[in-house]
Image 1 (cartoon, rainbow, N blue to C red):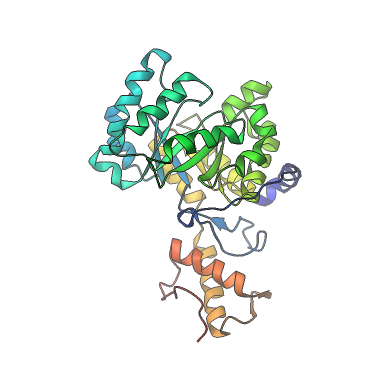
Image 2 (image 1 turned 90 degrees about the horizontal axis):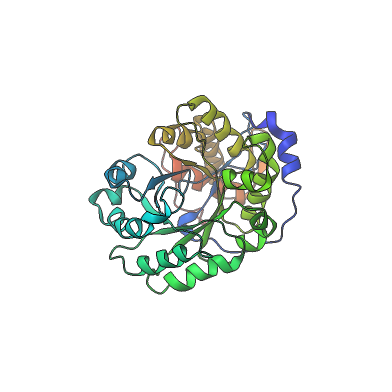
Length: 335
Protein backbone atom coordinates (compact mmCIF):
# COMPACT_ATOMS: atom_id res chain seq x y z
CA UNK A 1 0.00 0.00 0.00
CA UNK A 2 2.97 2.33 0.56
CA UNK A 3 3.59 2.67 -3.18
CA UNK A 4 0.08 4.03 -3.63
CA UNK A 5 0.97 7.03 -1.51
CA UNK A 6 4.55 7.54 -2.67
CA UNK A 7 3.96 10.99 -4.17
CA UNK A 8 2.26 12.25 -0.99
CA UNK A 9 5.04 10.86 1.18
CA UNK A 10 7.79 12.47 -0.89
CA UNK A 11 6.01 15.82 -0.65
CA UNK A 12 5.42 15.52 3.06
CA UNK A 13 9.02 14.65 3.85
CA UNK A 14 10.20 17.74 1.98
CA UNK A 15 9.43 19.60 5.21
CA UNK A 16 12.80 20.78 6.55
CA UNK A 17 13.81 20.25 10.20
CA UNK A 18 16.91 20.48 12.37
CA UNK A 19 17.03 18.19 15.36
CA UNK A 20 19.29 15.85 17.31
CA UNK A 21 18.80 13.78 20.45
CA UNK A 22 19.35 10.39 22.07
CA UNK A 23 16.83 7.62 22.60
CA UNK A 24 16.68 5.21 25.51
CA UNK A 25 17.59 1.62 24.81
CA UNK A 26 14.11 0.39 25.74
CA UNK A 27 12.53 2.54 23.05
CA UNK A 28 14.71 1.01 20.35
CA UNK A 29 13.37 0.81 16.83
CA UNK A 30 14.43 -2.15 14.75
CA UNK A 31 15.01 -2.24 11.02
CA UNK A 32 14.92 -5.04 8.53
CA UNK A 33 16.91 -3.14 5.93
CA UNK A 34 16.58 0.00 3.80
CA UNK A 35 13.17 1.36 2.95
CA UNK A 36 11.77 0.49 -0.42
CA UNK A 37 13.86 -2.66 -0.61
CA UNK A 38 11.06 -5.16 0.06
CA UNK A 39 8.80 -6.64 -2.55
CA UNK A 40 5.73 -5.56 -0.62
CA UNK A 41 6.89 -1.93 -0.50
CA UNK A 42 6.24 -1.70 3.24
CA UNK A 43 8.57 0.24 5.51
CA UNK A 44 11.14 -1.87 7.31
CA UNK A 45 11.07 0.12 10.55
CA UNK A 46 9.29 -1.44 13.52
CA UNK A 47 9.14 -1.24 17.30
CA UNK A 48 7.23 -3.00 20.07
CA UNK A 49 7.60 0.10 22.23
CA UNK A 50 4.59 2.06 20.96
CA UNK A 51 2.79 0.32 18.10
CA UNK A 52 -0.54 0.71 19.90
CA UNK A 53 -1.41 3.30 22.48
CA UNK A 54 -4.75 2.94 24.30
CA UNK A 55 -6.31 5.88 26.14
CA UNK A 56 -8.70 5.32 29.07
CA UNK A 57 -10.67 8.17 30.73
CA UNK A 58 -9.55 8.78 34.32
CA UNK A 59 -13.15 8.84 35.54
CA UNK A 60 -13.90 5.42 33.99
CA UNK A 61 -12.34 3.38 36.80
CA UNK A 62 -14.34 0.33 35.80
CA UNK A 63 -12.39 0.23 32.52
CA UNK A 64 -8.90 0.34 34.03
CA UNK A 65 -8.46 -3.43 34.20
CA UNK A 66 -9.77 -4.11 30.69
CA UNK A 67 -7.53 -1.34 29.35
CA UNK A 68 -4.48 -2.85 30.97
CA UNK A 69 -5.22 -6.25 29.45
CA UNK A 70 -6.33 -5.11 25.99
CA UNK A 71 -3.00 -5.94 24.34
CA UNK A 72 -1.75 -2.40 23.70
CA UNK A 73 1.95 -1.65 23.98
CA UNK A 74 1.00 1.32 26.15
CA UNK A 75 -2.11 2.16 28.14
CA UNK A 76 -2.63 5.74 29.27
CA UNK A 77 -5.12 7.17 31.74
CA UNK A 78 -6.44 10.49 30.45
CA UNK A 79 -6.84 13.64 32.56
CA UNK A 80 -7.33 15.99 29.64
CA UNK A 81 -10.03 15.93 26.95
CA UNK A 82 -12.15 13.15 28.47
CA UNK A 83 -12.55 14.98 31.80
CA UNK A 84 -14.77 18.08 32.14
CA UNK A 85 -13.26 21.07 34.01
CA UNK A 86 -15.41 20.57 37.12
CA UNK A 87 -14.17 16.97 37.52
CA UNK A 88 -10.43 17.55 37.07
CA UNK A 89 -9.59 17.35 40.77
CA UNK A 90 -11.48 14.09 41.23
CA UNK A 91 -9.91 12.64 38.07
CA UNK A 92 -6.30 13.35 39.05
CA UNK A 93 -6.72 11.65 42.41
CA UNK A 94 -8.70 8.73 41.00
CA UNK A 95 -6.07 8.18 38.30
CA UNK A 96 -3.59 7.00 40.93
CA UNK A 97 -5.54 3.74 41.11
CA UNK A 98 -4.72 3.13 37.45
CA UNK A 99 -1.06 2.51 38.32
CA UNK A 100 -1.66 0.57 41.55
CA UNK A 101 -4.15 -1.92 40.06
CA UNK A 102 -2.99 -5.59 39.95
CA UNK A 103 -3.53 -5.66 36.18
CA UNK A 104 -1.24 -2.67 35.57
CA UNK A 105 1.77 -4.96 35.11
CA UNK A 106 0.25 -6.29 31.88
CA UNK A 107 1.35 -3.22 29.92
CA UNK A 108 3.36 -0.01 30.07
CA UNK A 109 1.23 2.54 31.94
CA UNK A 110 1.19 6.29 31.52
CA UNK A 111 -0.91 9.38 32.09
CA UNK A 112 -1.95 12.21 29.80
CA UNK A 113 -1.92 15.41 31.80
CA UNK A 114 -3.47 18.75 30.94
CA UNK A 115 -1.38 21.35 29.12
CA UNK A 116 1.38 22.73 31.35
CA UNK A 117 0.45 26.24 30.21
CA UNK A 118 -2.84 25.82 32.12
CA UNK A 119 -3.41 25.65 35.92
CA UNK A 120 -4.86 22.14 35.66
CA UNK A 121 -1.67 20.87 34.03
CA UNK A 122 0.44 22.20 36.88
CA UNK A 123 -1.95 20.69 39.41
CA UNK A 124 -1.62 17.36 37.62
CA UNK A 125 2.16 17.44 38.04
CA UNK A 126 1.90 18.18 41.75
CA UNK A 127 -0.60 15.34 42.21
CA UNK A 128 1.60 12.86 40.32
CA UNK A 129 4.51 13.73 42.60
CA UNK A 130 2.50 12.19 45.44
CA UNK A 131 1.43 8.99 43.67
CA UNK A 132 2.72 5.90 45.45
CA UNK A 133 3.15 4.08 42.13
CA UNK A 134 4.50 6.51 39.55
CA UNK A 135 3.60 6.42 35.84
CA UNK A 136 6.21 5.10 33.42
CA UNK A 137 5.15 7.63 30.79
CA UNK A 138 3.70 11.13 30.90
CA UNK A 139 1.98 12.42 27.78
CA UNK A 140 2.10 16.22 27.44
CA UNK A 141 -0.67 17.72 25.27
CA UNK A 142 -0.58 20.92 23.22
CA UNK A 143 3.20 21.19 23.31
CA UNK A 144 4.32 24.37 21.55
CA UNK A 145 7.93 24.68 22.69
CA UNK A 146 10.72 22.60 24.15
CA UNK A 147 10.14 24.50 27.38
CA UNK A 148 6.82 22.68 27.88
CA UNK A 149 8.67 19.36 27.91
CA UNK A 150 11.43 20.73 30.14
CA UNK A 151 8.90 21.84 32.77
CA UNK A 152 7.52 18.31 33.14
CA UNK A 153 11.01 16.81 33.23
CA UNK A 154 12.12 19.27 35.93
CA UNK A 155 9.06 18.76 38.14
CA UNK A 156 8.71 14.98 37.87
CA UNK A 157 12.26 13.88 37.13
CA UNK A 158 13.47 13.92 40.76
CA UNK A 159 10.63 11.63 41.92
CA UNK A 160 10.36 9.58 38.71
CA UNK A 161 13.96 8.68 37.81
CA UNK A 162 12.91 6.47 34.88
CA UNK A 163 10.35 8.95 33.55
CA UNK A 164 9.66 8.90 29.81
CA UNK A 165 7.85 11.73 28.05
CA UNK A 166 5.63 11.89 24.96
CA UNK A 167 4.85 15.29 23.43
CA UNK A 168 1.63 15.87 21.50
CA UNK A 169 1.99 18.25 18.56
CA UNK A 170 -1.51 19.51 17.78
CA UNK A 171 -1.34 23.27 17.16
CA UNK A 172 0.10 25.44 14.35
CA UNK A 173 2.70 26.86 16.76
CA UNK A 174 3.63 23.35 17.85
CA UNK A 175 4.15 22.31 14.24
CA UNK A 176 6.29 25.40 13.61
CA UNK A 177 8.54 24.42 16.52
CA UNK A 178 8.38 20.65 16.09
CA UNK A 179 12.10 20.20 15.40
CA UNK A 180 13.19 21.97 18.59
CA UNK A 181 10.50 20.15 20.56
CA UNK A 182 11.72 16.77 19.31
CA UNK A 183 15.29 17.57 20.35
CA UNK A 184 14.33 19.32 23.57
CA UNK A 185 14.88 16.69 26.27
CA UNK A 186 16.71 13.39 26.71
CA UNK A 187 13.58 12.13 28.47
CA UNK A 188 11.45 12.65 25.36
CA UNK A 189 10.77 9.27 23.74
CA UNK A 190 8.15 10.13 21.12
CA UNK A 191 6.05 12.73 19.39
CA UNK A 192 2.31 12.24 18.90
CA UNK A 193 0.40 13.96 16.11
CA UNK A 194 -2.93 15.36 17.34
CA UNK A 195 -5.00 15.49 14.17
CA UNK A 196 -8.32 16.61 15.64
CA UNK A 197 -7.04 19.68 17.50
CA UNK A 198 -4.68 20.61 14.68
CA UNK A 199 -7.38 20.43 12.00
CA UNK A 200 -9.68 22.59 14.13
CA UNK A 201 -6.97 25.18 14.76
CA UNK A 202 -6.03 25.59 11.09
CA UNK A 203 -9.55 25.11 9.71
CA UNK A 204 -8.70 21.98 7.74
CA UNK A 205 -10.83 18.91 7.19
CA UNK A 206 -10.13 16.01 9.52
CA UNK A 207 -9.02 13.62 6.79
CA UNK A 208 -5.76 12.04 5.74
CA UNK A 209 -5.25 13.94 2.48
CA UNK A 210 -5.58 17.38 4.05
CA UNK A 211 -3.24 16.63 6.94
CA UNK A 212 -0.52 14.60 5.22
CA UNK A 213 1.93 17.52 5.13
CA UNK A 214 1.58 18.15 8.87
CA UNK A 215 2.00 14.45 9.57
CA UNK A 216 5.13 14.32 7.43
CA UNK A 217 6.69 17.24 9.29
CA UNK A 218 6.08 15.54 12.65
CA UNK A 219 7.53 12.26 11.39
CA UNK A 220 10.59 13.98 9.97
CA UNK A 221 11.29 15.89 13.19
CA UNK A 222 10.96 12.75 15.30
CA UNK A 223 13.22 10.67 13.09
CA UNK A 224 15.83 13.46 12.93
CA UNK A 225 15.85 13.44 16.74
CA UNK A 226 15.99 9.63 16.80
CA UNK A 227 12.75 9.24 18.75
CA UNK A 228 9.47 7.47 17.98
CA UNK A 229 6.34 9.01 16.48
CA UNK A 230 2.70 8.01 17.00
CA UNK A 231 -0.26 8.88 14.78
CA UNK A 232 -3.66 10.22 15.81
CA UNK A 233 -6.60 7.84 16.35
CA UNK A 234 -9.43 6.90 14.04
CA UNK A 235 -12.50 8.11 15.90
CA UNK A 236 -15.06 5.77 14.31
CA UNK A 237 -14.58 2.66 16.44
CA UNK A 238 -16.82 0.59 14.15
CA UNK A 239 -14.88 1.37 10.95
CA UNK A 240 -12.26 -1.36 11.18
CA UNK A 241 -11.59 -1.22 7.44
CA UNK A 242 -10.95 2.51 7.64
CA UNK A 243 -8.69 1.96 10.63
CA UNK A 244 -6.64 -0.60 8.73
CA UNK A 245 -6.31 1.67 5.70
CA UNK A 246 -5.28 4.73 7.73
CA UNK A 247 -2.88 2.66 9.84
CA UNK A 248 -1.23 1.37 6.65
CA UNK A 249 -0.86 4.93 5.38
CA UNK A 250 0.65 6.04 8.69
CA UNK A 251 3.06 3.10 8.73
CA UNK A 252 4.10 3.84 5.14
CA UNK A 253 4.73 7.49 6.06
CA UNK A 254 7.06 6.48 8.88
CA UNK A 255 4.93 6.42 12.03
CA UNK A 256 5.88 3.92 14.74
CA UNK A 257 2.30 3.30 15.87
CA UNK A 258 -1.17 4.70 16.32
CA UNK A 259 -3.45 5.71 19.17
CA UNK A 260 -6.46 3.51 19.88
CA UNK A 261 -9.59 4.83 21.57
CA UNK A 262 -11.20 1.39 21.94
CA UNK A 263 -9.72 -2.06 22.64
CA UNK A 264 -11.24 -3.47 19.46
CA UNK A 265 -8.87 -1.28 17.44
CA UNK A 266 -5.70 -2.71 19.00
CA UNK A 267 -5.33 -6.02 17.09
CA UNK A 268 -5.50 -4.22 13.74
CA UNK A 269 -3.02 -1.54 14.80
CA UNK A 270 -0.58 -4.09 16.20
CA UNK A 271 -0.80 -6.14 13.02
CA UNK A 272 -0.19 -3.23 10.67
CA UNK A 273 2.73 -1.89 12.69
CA UNK A 274 4.46 -5.27 12.94
CA UNK A 275 6.57 -6.99 10.28
CA UNK A 276 4.81 -9.64 8.25
CA UNK A 277 6.09 -13.19 7.76
CA UNK A 278 7.91 -12.29 4.54
CA UNK A 279 9.79 -9.45 6.21
CA UNK A 280 10.82 -11.67 9.11
CA UNK A 281 11.89 -14.45 6.76
CA UNK A 282 14.11 -12.05 4.84
CA UNK A 283 15.56 -10.67 8.07
CA UNK A 284 16.48 -14.21 9.13
CA UNK A 285 18.20 -14.82 5.80
CA UNK A 286 20.20 -11.62 6.24
CA UNK A 287 21.22 -12.76 9.73
CA UNK A 288 22.27 -16.13 8.35
CA UNK A 289 24.23 -14.45 5.56
CA UNK A 290 26.05 -12.29 8.08
CA UNK A 291 27.01 -15.33 10.12
CA UNK A 292 28.16 -17.28 7.08
CA UNK A 293 30.54 -14.48 6.00
CA UNK A 294 31.72 -13.63 9.54
CA UNK A 295 30.22 -10.12 9.24
CA UNK A 296 31.77 -9.44 5.84
CA UNK A 297 29.84 -8.25 2.83
CA UNK A 298 27.14 -10.66 1.69
CA UNK A 299 24.60 -10.67 -1.12
CA UNK A 300 20.93 -11.30 -0.29
CA UNK A 301 18.33 -11.18 -3.07
CA UNK A 302 20.89 -9.47 -5.29
CA UNK A 303 21.60 -6.68 -2.79
CA UNK A 304 25.03 -6.21 -1.19
CA UNK A 305 24.74 -5.99 2.60
CA UNK A 306 27.19 -5.28 5.39
CA UNK A 307 27.26 -5.03 9.17
CA UNK A 308 24.48 -2.39 9.56
CA UNK A 309 22.09 -4.69 7.69
CA UNK A 310 23.14 -7.71 9.77
CA UNK A 311 22.71 -5.95 13.12
CA UNK A 312 19.40 -4.35 12.14
CA UNK A 313 18.02 -7.67 10.94
CA UNK A 314 19.22 -9.40 14.10
CA UNK A 315 17.34 -6.89 16.24
CA UNK A 316 14.22 -7.31 14.14
CA UNK A 317 14.30 -11.09 14.54
CA UNK A 318 15.01 -10.81 18.26
CA UNK A 319 12.08 -8.48 18.87
CA UNK A 320 9.49 -10.05 16.60
CA UNK A 321 10.51 -13.70 16.25
CA UNK A 322 11.71 -15.45 13.14
CA UNK A 323 10.16 -17.50 10.42
CA UNK A 324 12.04 -20.78 10.97
CA UNK A 325 12.55 -20.53 14.77
CA UNK A 326 16.30 -20.98 14.36
CA UNK A 327 18.64 -19.72 17.03
CA UNK A 328 19.66 -16.08 16.73
CA UNK A 329 22.95 -14.83 18.17
CA UNK A 330 22.78 -11.98 20.64
CA UNK A 331 25.46 -10.12 18.71
CA UNK A 332 27.74 -10.46 15.71
CA UNK A 333 31.01 -10.90 17.54
CA UNK A 334 34.29 -11.81 15.95
CA UNK A 335 34.79 -15.57 15.98
